[in-house]
Amino acid sequence: MSLTAESRPAPAAAPAGAPPTPILDLQNLGKSYAPGLPPVLDALDLQVAAGELVTLLGPSGCGKTTTLRLIAGLETPDTGHIRIAGREMTSPPVPPERRGVGLVFQDYALFPHLTVLGNVLFGLHGLPRSQRLARARETLALVGLTVFESRLPHQLSGGQQQRVALARALAPRPTLLLLDEPFSNLDAQLRHSTRQEVRAILRGSGTTALLVTHDQEEALAFSDRLLVMRAGRVEQIGPPHEVYAHPRTAFVANFLGRSNLLSGTAAGLTARTALGDLPLAEAAHGPVMVSVRPEHLAFARPGEEGAAVTILAREYKGHDVTYTVGLGQHELLVHTAGGEVWPEGEQVRVRVTQPARAVR
Image (cartoon, rainbow, N blue to C red; front, side, top):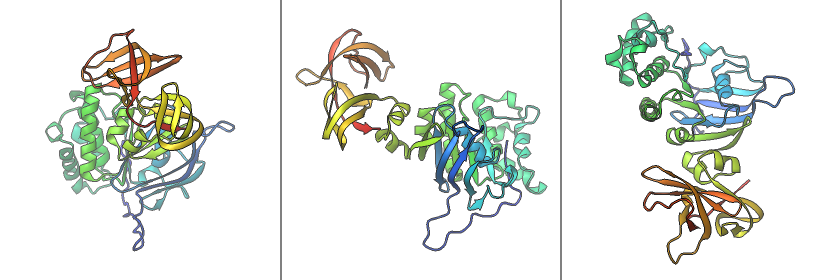
């Protein structure tokens, strides 16, 4: 499905010296589907710059897809404003076909009776007839599908079908591209390669895109920035490496990757926990919850200090191993880069290799 604008104005120019107008500007966006129930989306603020790839990450029901549907004009917000390239979309409401937005779904939504070229041409009704064929073939070349233009969708692999859906959305040259779980129907290996291809295509074309996913690896690999969402609210926003390395809440620490969460008592840059006295990345005082990533725990070598643990289980993956270890009533994860493989039931010691993070 493509949402196109027959006559889309250029983004509003910012005054001299002012920051550029964001391609997408959401202010205080809210949505509830039934009176008396908690809102599906609650006071969301977000600005997306031109050419930026932003991901909405969170569990089912956190408001990710609702956000996309509000931006596309498929739902009406209860509160707030949506501006695309400086144009107000909510007051009065602008219909989907006039927002300059492209949509790519997880089920591709290709027309089975149309060829690859026919599917891409379908999204170009807003162009003069004389320009449609050239634009469609130009976009197929962008996604590397020129040689498949006469094939039907069922004659393509899942990854190729996804690129056809992407080409159809990109052909009208939308101001903003929205991707709703676009890789979830692909197997693991194909999902990885298709994600890389799509990211390279978007980056090469300078397209501004908003991706919705619940896959943490996908969010980390795809995004310039990501928003971790929970119950309709943003828990944290920032570049993937910063959000992963500096989680602000226990939810973010455990949802974006895996983390060991331990209660303790902090005194400045040290927290006393079941693992012993841990260094903290930032000063804190009083009762705290600390996050220790599994890769920040290591097995102590002979002569090194560490907390005594028992190996309960292991996941051997060739290039690395993840252990579950018992520490009193706690079960912790330890991630190692292969090497010696410890048997289950072994008594060992673990040490912390990086400062822990105090989280809310």
